[in-house]
Image 1 (tube, rainbow, N blue to C red):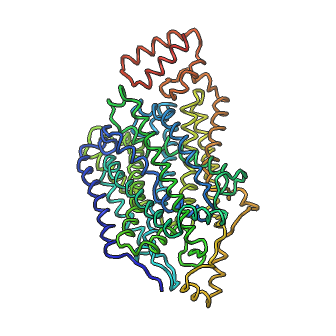
Image 2 (image 1 turned 60 degrees about the vertical axis):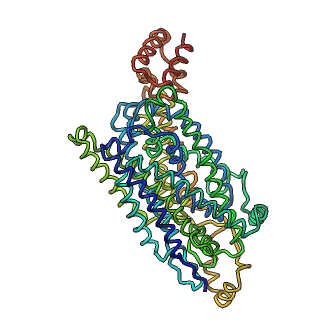
Image 3 (image 1 turned 30 degrees about the vertical axis):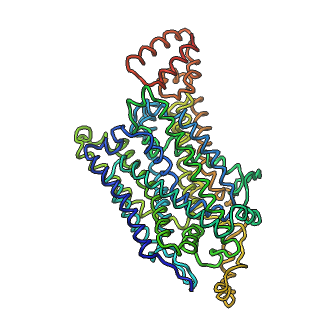
Length: 616
């Protein structure tokens, strides 16, 4: 029998690192007792270093650490192309969206929609969209470490204990309660500074897996030879098929919209931008605000590539003795923890460090998400409805913390249903993408298209939401089969071979669980598109319908009344060409004087200078 469990040293390392993370959180929670504003924005006094690492940690969570290696094992390395999408989105976020949000000094990103359209309905649509999009994502993030920490309910005598003797439900409760307690007492400073430690742990954990994997299989060259022999070395698969995960078009389109939603319109990330030092970045050093995003880019790309590389070495280790096919583990999400216990249990303490790595990935995203959910709920829904909210800071702080605690409990409840949605990566991108695609479309046309009015924005968003949710819900109630390229069990060790020599029926059953390719028929042609492009469907629908409806409802004339500060600096000059030429001089002089009086940021001052020069 092969039974490997956590040692006492592993538990000590794991608990010690969690205590260190919790201490940072509790320290800043104590410092943020002053007001709800301090809890949510840190009084806008955060600096580049912690915000940069926090941006890396927040969306490179358990979905990356466990989900990406599982995708590589099943369908190959095509997912590496997301690095191109990440790079493009960082430039878009820094130059198109960030200047507007920071200049307006908003706490909730949906406040931009109210200012842009002077409509509480559009703002409420954005708020509810974010809440509904983020809650399922939090459930997936919570489910990820539960998979890593659980024993996995399996009756096979040869089963290698995943990491701890906990079942998946017990793990969800333990991890969920700890995360909920921590995040409900901390503020944005606690979240960001704890992210710094957790980001370091994530890099360290993945590096350990890659190093041990290369030792096991004989180096980089052998790893890629095995990958190519198994048909998984894919970089430029030009075949266009909306039902497959392994072509470059779906990866690029899907990741572009998904990362765009994360970095351009997600409250979780925007709240970090708007929590940085106001005076420092609003004037002399405004470029450093954008630099925070650029500094974050190498970390994002590096961690994404490392996660893919961990999938490469794990496939190299198990390509000819697949533990999923054998039934040693039930899900591909458990491949990484299985590998850790199979190869690293001989080094006491390293499995504990890996669990801390996985837990840190989950904790960083959960804490950020709960804080953002509480912020949107408080600022967009509750604050204006409570007469005491604007003058009783102590009471407001309690209310915000209670909201964060409540969202933690909801996430725990929802996480029990994640297991039926495919791998962690597929579940997160399908649920998160079906809501965030339309949100990204709504904000994109609002900030880039002057003529888009509230009717077009609201109708476009609702249509995009309907389209993407229909496909997403259909995929849940009419699930597609799990796809995985072939593996073998030809070179398992003697003990495994002896066990299965007398249990051929068990092998045949587990071998039939996965298809190597899939071409849907009937209703599957609608519901079984690749999880990668679910967000793209909602985005395109929102943009196209939003623009058409706006043009059909007098959007051009309404646009003349729009404050140009609500548009991206990149399109302000273009947009003002539509103004009557007779008013050009008055427009330039009036706005330049207004900016001087308000001492606005160099984003706006630079934009006005360019506009005045162009129009004169």
